[in-house]
Image 1 (cartoon, one colour):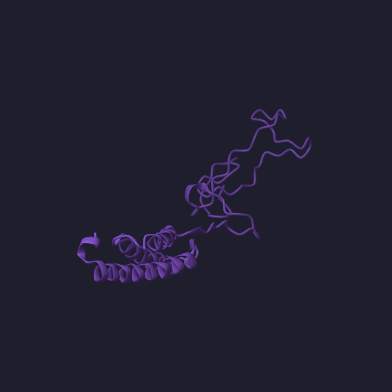
Image 2: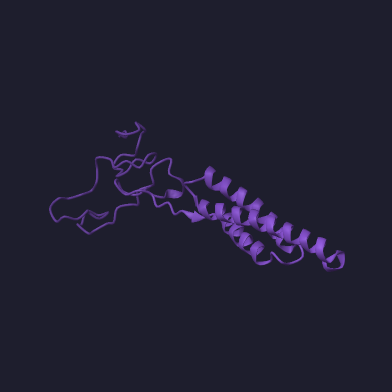
Length: 162
């Protein structure tokens, strides 16, 4: 007996093709009682053997039924979130001795990297607006920190600088 799907030879009386898993002609269905016959032909129900997954599907996962899209969950980019937090922190520490500047520089770098990642993979990441806001807040924080640090140094001297 040969498989109608792949053309490979299958043992006589086989229910499924051993190479591709296609159901063959002899299913063992009686049609009288609505059950498959047992090994002795006594009419006892025998569960069919498991159908192997179609070739090309890794791990035997089954794609969703037709009309049902794949579930693709978007997530916020963590670098954009970090840029937003660092931008806010650089504004909070604007009167500190250069600490806000360091936070702002880190926020600028993370904001740019995060926005680039969102632009490259919009199917995975979201949160570009958070990256933009963090980037802008970090620039404002760095500018204000540098201005206040220079003003402190000019008006009160170096001993108040640190």
